[in-house]
Image (cartoon, rainbow, N blue to C red; front, side, top):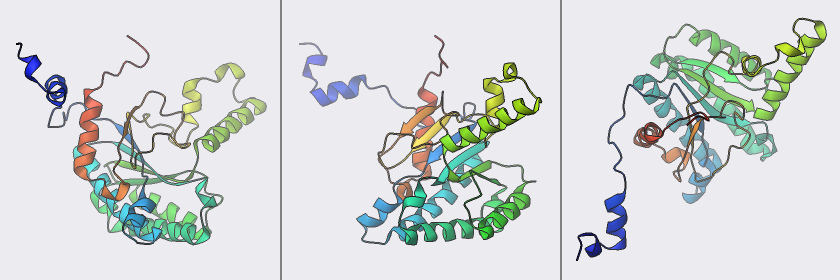
Length: 258
């Protein structure tokens, strides 16, 4: 009898399972991480709490994750805070989310800015209240000279809207004679996106078990590694972040090559 024949099916699978490294390779960190923070509402429902409690818990998780990324030396993180489709949610929930985001931006001086974070809001601002628009300007100016991680808060963001805005801008420049049709390239389009000048995400993390992009960074995620977890966002810990990065480091990124 061979040694393998004595193994149960579970043991056999475990025998051949590639052992994951237990520590992050600090020389192979993703430069940019995108995060779809999903599951706040379900987290609250499981606990018999209002959805607003889930969003508050999610905001607390965000602070921990951004701080951890900054300490690791990750240069950019883009978090999906409010989509162009989220306006269809109940008004009470939308109002709470807007107030939560406003408070998050106001508290930047005492929270994330203290961690040397550069805060930027990406998305269409026209639909946001004047108060939020003014606070975005203040927060971006306040954190502009920080030297740590750049956190893009995708607020009233949709990738299709982003691409439409970029295309309109390019078409306008062609019409004005500032560029020609022949000048249009992937690099030009990238430069006109909200994340222009930043590297595309190397890693996308989505929580809550959903496996889709939900209109998030469709252009920028072309060659990103994707990591999906059943964890609800408020339960997503720094250890979970580390696991996602370790999984990213196990993958062979070929960018369409061999």
